[in-house]
Each structure stands twice: as structure tokens, then as C-alpha cells.
Amino acid sequence: MPAERIVIGTRGSELALWQSRFIQSRMKELFPSCAVELTVIKTLGDKILDSPLSKIGDKGLFTKEIEKALLDGTVDLAVHSLKDIPTLVPRGLTLGAITKREDVRDVFIAHPAKPHRTLAEVPPGGAIATGSLRRKCQLLHLRPDLHIVDLRGNLNTRMKKLEESSWDGMVLAYAGLKRLGWEKSMTEVLSCDTLLPAVGQGALGIEIRQDDQRVRKMVQKLHHLPTAQSVTGERSLLRHLEGGCQVPIGTFGRIEKGRFRLEALVGSLDGTRIVRGHIVGDPDRSESLGVELAKQLLESGAREILEAIRLTGTTIPRAEV
Image (cartoon, rainbow, N blue to C red):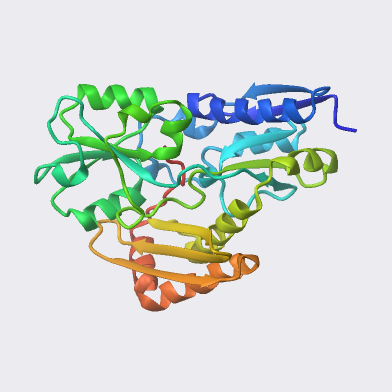
């Protein structure tokens, strides 16, 4: 029998609440006799808004306080953007389910008062805003002339900042914009050849206590195996590459015609160097394939990029919009 009451821990941003309410509604559909409630928990990443993410340097920046509430029993499960969840979760917790993935791509949003609509149309020296070093690296590799502006805040804040700025545009994730009904603001959907997405982009991770078999059985009904296999490969690659240092990494795993294909890149902070590769294999081997591709990238020059970034002391939390 399902629990009579389930409490979901969530951040308070508009997107986080949409995601948690989505899971809440699915749980109510599946278990109509169960009361499913939300508890908003403020994380460190929500409190520190005046510093670039790359300067804060804390893994679990958007999950740690919620995970503490899980461990002490205050909440029964947590809904996260999967790309916010570190590859190693705290002892006693586990990913109980991974939902079906939304579109993984990034999008360009042009300044509404400027004539250009696409990234290619941005004039030389144009200013593009993003809070992600993954995006910054790939944008500068594509267009070394661009000026990258650091951007923090929720979607409404970012839209307002863009409108009030002289920037030429900003880059965000398709998934978040679609979930909040902001599709009309997208002026260009960027292919994965242009920008590889973040690890887990577009998927939701449901985190639970490892020993909570009742909640595990409930959330398993929301689990999407093809997505889980795909992001397992991505997270395995990231875990093998990080080695205690987080770097600009883009990756996209998917199942095509029964085969798992994983693409990935590692780049320098200024975008001058990028090492890119791919691997194909059995979906059931996605975790080991992620490790194999990571090793290939390291041997192809990613090791030198990683070592250079370690010397700068830069750390990059994974939270992006």
C-alpha cells in the first residue's frame, strides 16, 4: 500500500516549482488516495545571487539543503533538474527515478529591440549572456569575437535583464523555457553540433532515501528507461573526467535504432581548445561506455585541458537554466 502522505522537497524558483508540481500531479494520478504535498527549501545557490556560479565552487549548490531534509526525514523525495545533481549523491540517498527527457538543446534569445534573430547574425564583438561556462566555452570556440556576460537569476529575472541591457542576446535551455511556456521568446534553437548540452539536460531526477522501499516502488512508475540509460552514460563520463575538478563539459547520450550513442567534449575556459569524440554501443552498457569515452578524450588532449583548469582553481557547479 502506498504511503498516505508524501512530502516533496523543492527549490522555490518558478521552474523548480513547475517540475515538482508536475511530479506531484503524476503521483496523485497514480496514487489518488495519497496526499502529495510540497515543501519549499532554500538552497545555497538560491541565497547567493551576486556571484557567478563559477566563483562559488560548491558541488550540490542547488541540492545540498534538500538532501539534508531527505536524510532527516523532513521530506520523502526531492525533484531536481538532473543536471543539478552531482554524479555522487550523499550516502543514504539514491536516484529513485529519472523521467522522460525533454528536448536537450540550448536556444538563443535575441534582444527584442535588435534586428538580429540568430547567433550567426550577431555583429562582431556582440555581447551574449549566459551563466554557464560550458556554453561560454563553446560560444567562444565558435565565435572568438563574442563578449560573454555572466548571468544569474530565474527566468523572469534573466528576461528582464536582457530587455534592460545592451546585450545582443542570451543562451538558455530549451527544456526550461518550454516547461514555463516561454517558447515564443526563442529566436533560434541551437543544434547539438553548435552547442552540446549539459549532463542530464532536459531530464528530471527524483532523489529518495536508499532504504525507503515504499517510496521507491511508487516513483519507479515515473521512471523512463531509455532516458535513464542515456543520462547514465553522460553522468558516468562526467564522473570519470572530473577527478575533483569541474570543467566545461558538453555531452549528449541517446538511443538510436537500438544503439546507444554518446557524444562529448571537454573545452578550455576561453574556448581556444576543445577535444570532442563519440562512442556507440549497447544501451545496457551505457555506464561503461561513458567511462570508455572519457578515457578516449583524456588521451586525445582533455587531460592537458583539465590540468590547466586545475591550476586556475576554477570550479563549476552544474546548475544552469
